[in-house]
Length: 217
Image 1 (spheres, rainbow, N blue to C red):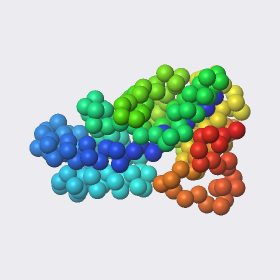
Image 2 (image 1 turned 120 degrees about the horizontal axis):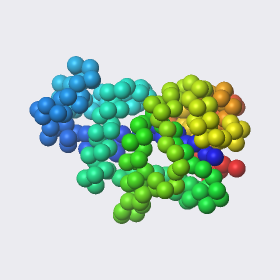
Image 3 (image 1 turned 180 degrees about the vertical axis):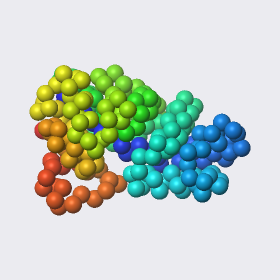
Image 4 (image 1 turned 60 degrees about the vertical axis):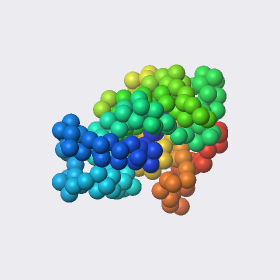
């Protein structure tokens, strides 16, 4: 069984949608309610709001109010066709091969399950989109599994799926998540993609590291 992390939430793909919605709906009580949890100094205008969102994303801060805004943006953007999920070229062929080989594919993300469903239902493929949800057998987030930096969350996932820890492979781009999963007895692989935080020599020595999913044995 493979469990993948989905924490590179692709805010770059939502920036235009966020600005458009913020500019068009700034005075709308519903939109102001949506961003009410943001710090006061981040709610002065749409550009300042976006700058704050980018700062949180860059620092990998999982603020609850950010996740609420994310869910709204994804729902609006995907339903309107303004958003399509970009994936690296190797992802779809490898996921299909794993599924065909009988592996169970599961997502564990700090993004909500609802956000995951939207994310994988509108994957960009050429000039259109493709629904990849049939490839996955389960979705977990910090609500139904627990914090991603605690080993108990990974124990809960493999127990709920009736799997032995040693038979589970967890893929992530976050070394702290890799540490928690390893402590839970899960075989963990760090995916070193372009744009990810640089890995230290110590991390490279501690964990298996791949650049493409096709490199996984």
